[in-house]
Length: 437
Image 1 (cartoon, rainbow, N blue to C red):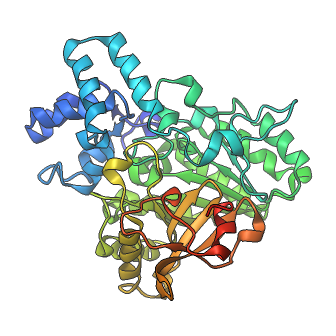
Image 2: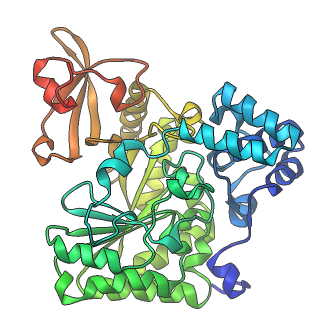
């Protein structure tokens, strides 16, 4: 495929952010109120969208109800009404200092680091700066390369939204691979390294290689699996198609697989529309040709994919393009959850009904899964016990490995949206909730 893109644009697209947001929304929808409200919300939550998303993925005749528009563009309901009013007042007054002060205050109330990420996941060593890494589970190390802490576009539901706002104290990042390699050398139980962000595929390939090639050295042979989290296929597939940067990243993945590493490209795919363009299909084919395993995950969220048919279509398309459905997550308790969040009972119904519409190869996605402070909790069902209805739950992964795989129960709550809203069903279930009664 030949594409007329210069080297910079091939790596990182033209994008819209900041004050250009209002102009774009007015041009495409003719709705100045919608544009104003989006601008107000963007003072708090990050906004960025690539030219590819604007021109190829969004059906502007359906906006604002198009699912990709809902996925990427701010909406007033992403903020609580009182928060929106405070920010709007500062915007109307043109008070930049007031906007910044109000936005910082609102962000602090939005639980910018859910799941005790900063307090419990960051490695603590006197001689290793672990501030850009997370080590929650014994086998897996998450690494946040500084150069990859942005994306080609931002998802409104992103639980790592705090990485992208202008508050340095909220961001996690390592400046280079040295802290990662030193930490791995001290922790031979780590078998999986996940580069995340942000999106590592916004980086030049030589920078990406500086983190990945040290994993091929003999002293790190305990690292069996390399994961790269990305939404480039959805938001800028030309990263994998156009120019020397595309070719070099594919060669890098080939070197890793040829050396015996299991390379998992963790695709964030929220809606089947992301897989329907020819360039997205070509990008998936090129990725698969490297020997990497392609897996896909996303949360189930209102306005985008809160429908069983949407998930069935997505899973079927993934299987068709050699992508393994991996997780259906629950929207985390952070950021724009008032807008995107669903009750756990509804999320489970969507998952179950979607499974009924696909073959066995499409049923590999585990869900709905809450990635909460104690671990990844999957809702296995709603059951009737002697004392009433209950959620049947199980840890897929946990800080305490002894919890993994053991069934337990929580009192059924039709409105509950997150782990900390659930209560143990009976005395034997309390240990799974940290001893809560």
